[in-house]
Image (cartoon, rainbow, N blue to C red; front, side):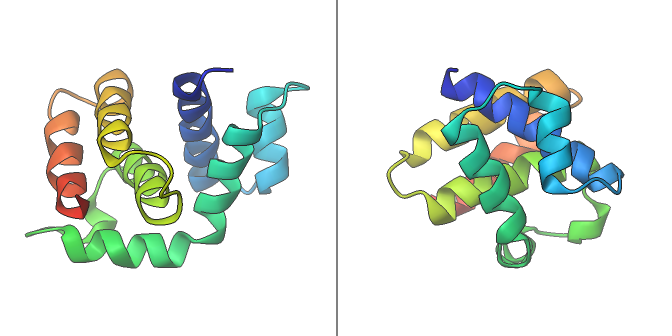
Length: 124
C-alpha cells in the first residue's frame, strides 16, 4: 500500500474512532479487513497513543479557536499530521503538510485545506 493510501485509511479509521465506541483494533479491522500495512498501523496506533500530547500541541497552534470548535474531519486530519510531525522525524515535514492538505481537500469543505495548512505550518 502506498503511504498516501495508508494515510487516507488512517484518517478514516481515526474519524471512526472519534464517532463510535469501537476499539482501535476493531476500527482498523473495519477499514482494512484482512489487509495489513505497517505504516498504516503505526500512524493509527501512534496517533491514538499520543492523543493528549497531540491535542495539547495543536491547541497551542490555534489562534482565535478552541480545539473543541474545530470540525471533526479537520481535527482528525490535524491529529494525524501532528503525530507524523512530532513522532516520525524520518518523514519530511513538507510531505506531511502536503498530504494533510490533500486529505483536507478530499474530505473537508472548501476552507479546510487553508485552515489545515495554517495550523500545521506553525510546526515547520
